[in-house]
Length: 132
Image (cartoon, rainbow, N blue to C red):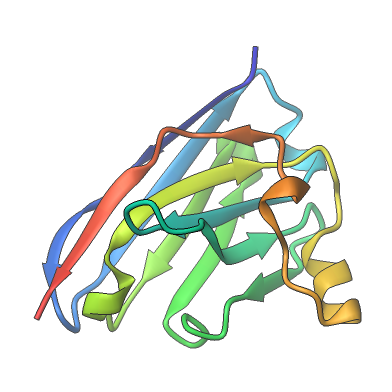
């Protein structure tokens, strides 16, 4: 059974930084793409960043230059380093694991953003709150 568990959320002031972590088990972690999405209330979940098995990355325009997605294959862990946080970054952040190996690369080539349907396993989410 695949498990996806996020951690690292919290409350920070505008301009602050946080690191989110995501540990997976029961999953061929190193072979597939993984990503971060976020959701505000009942609004649609939006993509934040994706990293492929080969390390290729893609980011939503709203977080480019501020967020960095990385992965440690030895630890089966995905990270999202967030800096210069803004109140509009406030959301529940979800880690997502795919059975596809290339999502970021295809997104870069086609110009189409990754979608929820590209991912097959989801964590429960970790809340990030940025106060002004």
